[in-house]
Image (cartoon, rainbow, N blue to C red; front, side):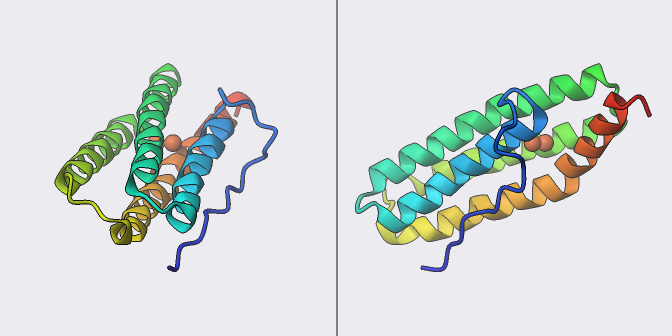
Length: 139
Ligand SMILES: [Fe+2]
Ligand SMILES: [Fe+2]
């Protein structure tokens, strides 16, 4: 199995309610899926971690959308559309797995979420992060 945890890159002391703190939590939940893929001998605990990751992502997306509204972030419609798409894709993906899931499928699933998270973070969350820190420093 060739799965690596994501290097979080945010300060571990960040408040979980803050932008960086929420991303640290999200990456940590992803890393727990990876850990489970390496160590669990059954599908159920891995699926539970995927579910927890997706629940947290949903909560986090709604927070980010609130921050974008409050700050009148110019790219918020596109950013929100990507959140909606990620959620829909993840639901479709998890749904498509049905009950036929096997332990051998888990690394591919973890890779899927790695790609899902990495692409959104680079294309949407990093520009928002820069905008938020500029807004806070008064520009
Ligand atoms: Fe986002
Ligand atoms: Fe985010």
